[in-house]
Length: 103
Image (cartoon, rainbow, N blue to C red; front, side):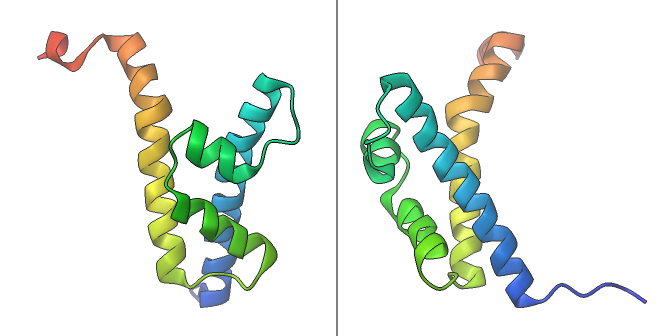
């Protein structure tokens, strides 16, 4: 028999991704500044440029009810876009050079 994923399981999985992504980003700024007192919002929104609504979604997932599947999906997609632009595009550039050079 096939496995069925419930809406609750999807909400939990997406929320875990958001928590790990946002908290990991905040922790990287806290360790760089050697200050654990920097807020998650300040680190992620003000310093890193992550959209504030993603941080708010993480806050809800952590401290309130889990967000809806739709909101979680949007947050996960935005997080992927952020990490691609912030990290993976730079890695690809170091490995292969600018896209114009490859064409």
